[in-house]
Image 1 (tube, chains in turn yellow, blue):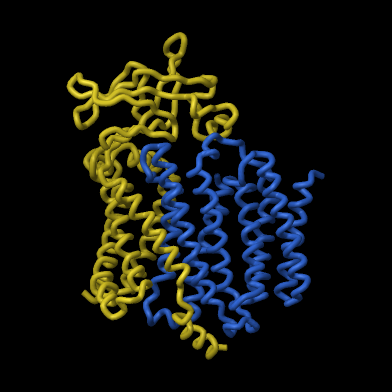
Image 2 (image 1 turned 180 degrees about the vertical axis):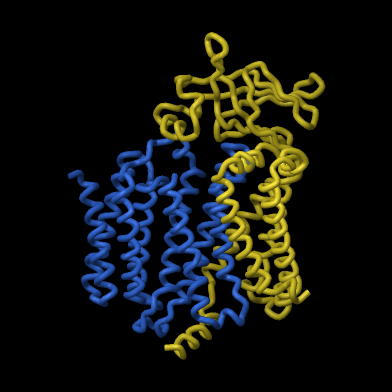
Length: 275
Length: 245
């Protein structure tokens, strides 16, 4: 138990994970691993692990080692909170800072739990490409239909790469609020919900979140039609993640504002000795 | 020469002069040159705001300018107060000069006004990221500098630690804003790409500095190195990022 709650273990985990992330950054910029990592974004990681990951051993091993490191860090944090930080509350029950110090670790565990849920709970479909009138069946059996798209700007602005888009989709040229897509969600032929979607304004219905990433132009017909690229996801713990993260930051700010000077006095003493 | 180009040259020259003056403990000159360097950077920020109709956000010219303005202000805070250190102020101004020097090779032009720059969470992400970087860099410099005239007996680790924690808090706030922007744009708050891994790496390095076992916490050289690491890592990664796109 002592070893599991040790600050040395914390330090080794943090340093090891930092190095491992640096390796991941290199992978993310090298072909073909860049494409393999992009595939991780397309679905829930649960589904990626069950399918595409098996054909991408380098990225799979990198990811599994990363998970192992984060798991060990989470265990270390949980044991340290349980055996060291929480017992301190009895002795220093009146000190708000002691509570907040324990709180920041508990909240970090909740944030990690939220991350875990994002990997495995619900479902996620990315890059769902639909033209008006087209539908996509969702994993829960419901049907998502794009009933209409309205693109008020010049269609020549569409089908650009990310970099081209950043240079061309300018505030005075691309009017985000005017470009919309109408959606309908149905189950067994019965309409469940209808909504209008814009870029940066997702549509939420019954725990389902539909996000409009971009419009695209279909040149196979005359005149060309404008369709949408959607992400459809359901994650029951998404709000928990954001709430925990916000609380985590607020506690962090409190700790920053009340950082104690005397903790470093012994260091100053050592420094004076050295000098 | 355009007025903002003159402002850039003023910022560059004055920050170098302020850094040297503060380092040599020429207090009045440090204040005067520091004020001129701040005025130069502030004028560049005004130019960006006038041109784009928004605050400086992303890209080398915009983010370097905003970072330099913040570092200028932090340098002034090092000239007074409990942990006053002219050497720290000097080093901070020299860091401003170094960052501004990068703009000699990077294009000094405002980014095209991408429509997403007008989204609140996008702005919050970029602004908080630069603010966090400024605090982390200043915290790093406080750990590295050794000033016998400082009230703490040459040791500015107390200030370094405070800036490290504030920098991390600002960094996390920026991450949250970025997550929310990403969620509403791409449908998920996390992406498996270099940017997200890089952010997590900086947070882990900062966390490592704040979790020293008591035995190691007594080794002054190690503590100074670890406190300096987040700001230096953040600055290096950020410069690489700007250069490689």
